Length: 201
Image 1 (cartoon, rainbow, N blue to C red):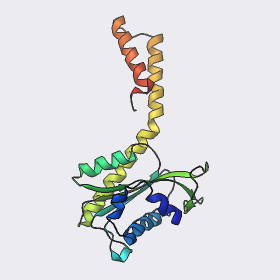
Image 2: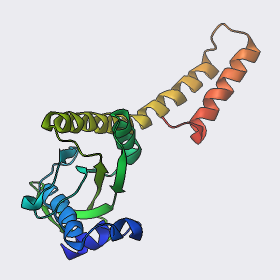
Image 3: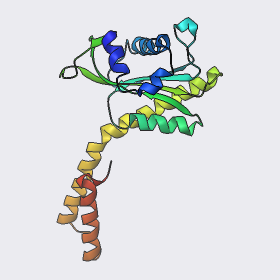
Image 4: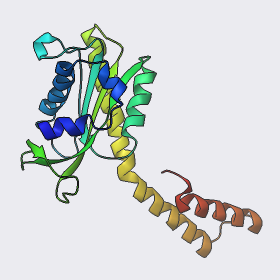
């Protein structure tokens, strides 16, 4: 737990930490640790809640906790969804941790950063405007989970899209469509430019 808490807050601006009490900081990290206790690879876990003293810590904000496989675009996508919902962001904590899990997906520890066999997982803690209604919190959790599914599909699909682009470029060279040569040359050059790391698929 100590190793987890140290890494959990290692990239957070000290001014953000100074605004919160040590019990609330520890409670937030422990809450995320407990939430991450069981997770299958390929599945995002999301919850939205209002912590209270009964939970061992409290916040004036509503909390979004996410545990997911590490991949690109997670924070940007969650941030855009929160903004789309008309909520203000007050704090984002986003450590990427190498974790150890048992075969059934139970979290057993934090691995060293250079551990090649460990899973790299994204822990995202977001504080947004306080939401009193349980229905609104449930709707936010569902929309964030949907966005994370979209991100997973896009990240899984980009290599296939890039391969398809390369196939199209190759087909243009072998079987030219009936358009003027200068237009064809320009179109092919543009597709090749896109495939040369100038476009995020």
